[in-house]
Image 1 (cartoon, rainbow, N blue to C red):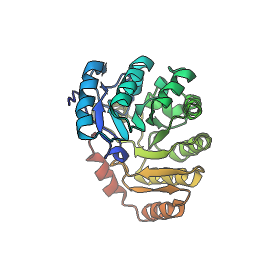
Image 2: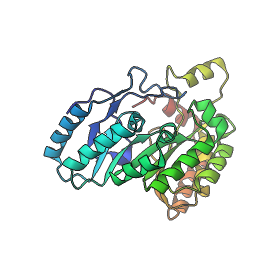
Image 3: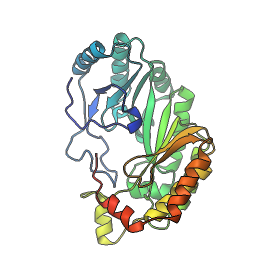
Image 4: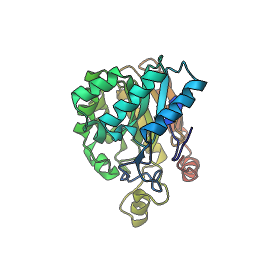
Length: 292
């Protein structure tokens, strides 16, 4: 099997077989990210995809879940994705979910009929790095969509029967704005039903637009204490049943559990961390982080 670009996936997909579908990121304008800046976006040719799929079948013929790598495989469009889903169906007959990263921007490009067709072909498990459901924060991050877009496109996925997960980023709104942003996000996503709700936390990576803003003084980063407060606001407010996971390396205080059942336990951990926080130690930890 060939992998020409970065191979990255969420931690909860760590045991899922992977195959390269795209490399690079077609958007490349998120202000916090430098992950794919050296890679041009491209779709892996179908012939090579099928060849890799044949190799995968020889190793895991009974695979039930598959992860398509790339910054945003959903960007490839309906025909390309349908062809690859059909190839998977023909080779891995027990396949239940073909998962991948997806952007709100790209979901908008698909018709309802196309989403339903892909759902029937087992495309699902979409991981959507929405980051926030607050217009100011989304514009600051350069995401290219609005808060309304997030809720509208996720509801379209639900109507199509397509499973998805959401990723939120604490600290993204900047100093003093975290809790308000979390409240707006909670208000919006409580109308949705994501299978998984994960969080990361803004880290200023060299070469990013956020690094330039910090250097120029136009953006003030949130303290580690405020990021914990933002997490607390999320956990308190989310009312739907989901697995909440804040164990990304960018989260200085890792917590996880099934909501609403583990809400009190998670809040107790965060409240303890907030009371006994060592701001300097956590800030030093964040400075040492590097993109995966």
